[in-house]
Length: 192
Image: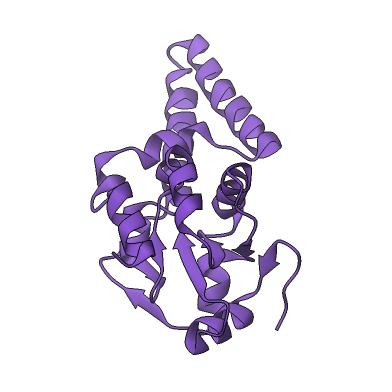
C-alpha cells in the first residue's frame, strides 16, 4: 500500500473503495466518455477533462470528500488535479499509472463496449498524417513539411505535457457519445 503527497497506488485505492473508510473516497475518471464506457472503476464518476476544466469551480464546491482522479496513465488526471487545485480543492490524489495500473493490480473493472483509447487515436492520426505526407512528398516535395509539423507538434506535446491533437480528437462525436451533463454529475456527487 503506497501513497505520496499527490498520488495513490492501485492497492490503496482498491482497499479504500472496497471498504469506504472515512473520509469517503470519490473517484473521478477524466477520460472521454468512450474510454469510460470501455472500462472503468466501479462507482467512479465520468467527468471528462475538458468538462472538468470548464466546471471546476462548481465541481470543487461539490467535492468535500477525498478525491482520486483517474485516466489511462495519469497524465490527464494530473492536469485535472492542477485545475481543481486552482479552484481551491485540496483533497486531491491521482491514481499512479491510471486505469492501466488498476488493471495490472487485478482490481475490478466494469467493462462495456470496447473503444480505442485517446492515446491510440493520437498515434493513428499522427502516424497516418506522417506516412501520407512522406509518400506524397515523392510527387509533391513540399509535402514533407507536413510530416515535420506533426513531429514538431508531438515534440511540443511531450515538452509541455499537453496534446492539442488529443484535445481535438476528444471532441469528436465518437469520443463524446454518452457525455455527462455537468449539472447531473454535480447532482449525483451531492446525492441529489
